Length: 336
Image 1 (cartoon, rainbow, N blue to C red):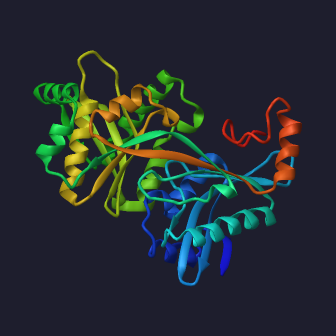
Image 2 (image 1 turned 90 degrees about the horizontal axis):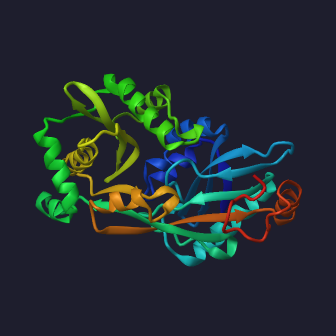
């Protein structure tokens, strides 16, 4: 049995991904670049026992004013992936993770589970919190069936965008800077935090790192970029990264983008296009919008782990005396 925290260059990280079903969020290059945005250190918890493997990507962050750290998932859904669903193995792996984190001074871990990749996380080694559902499109059905599954208002808007001459262009990375301006305008409009202002340099660096696993699609009106998506196509799973369209009356480029991406990914052989859910997993207007493209739903959970309970409680008492250290279902970690 081995249990350890791996650096991105570790041979075991790459070898484990060859043994387990996973997504782009689990690839070392992705974790490295996302860690730069968080201001943390990229890592992965790795567990191997009797020829079975488990891996959990993490970003390790300093807890200011202490010599301690905590861990958080990279952006997206990079939950634990393993080569088996055996409950005994998962029990052993989760127990080993808690012990490993505690031994190296990591107080807690906040992990986003992947809605499409089943993970029988053992709740006895943390708290599972259900946030809501995500939406995916089944790309194995016919294009006619995908169209039938699309809500009537979306179909209407897609047809209007086509009649208006909206042009969809894939992988013209010279347009990245134009689309980032559209994206930032939208982030300012919705009051997004600084983390979500992904820069052109970050997106370009991510594309350079993962190559043709990442794609840019833009919508043009009279040659002007009015919207676009960045998305991954990896091992049969297409998943959106960031997207944005300029708001304007009677502009339906966003719906046309989603429709074009799913058809493009289907033609490439992808099995599923994961759209994600509402903000924080909520059943909100964003979820309703995505739900209009497909009936497929998936539960989204986070896993909150306290590796060192006495230290966690002390930090909460010192930094947020109004919070209950025993309640792991609200803001986590509660000392931040």
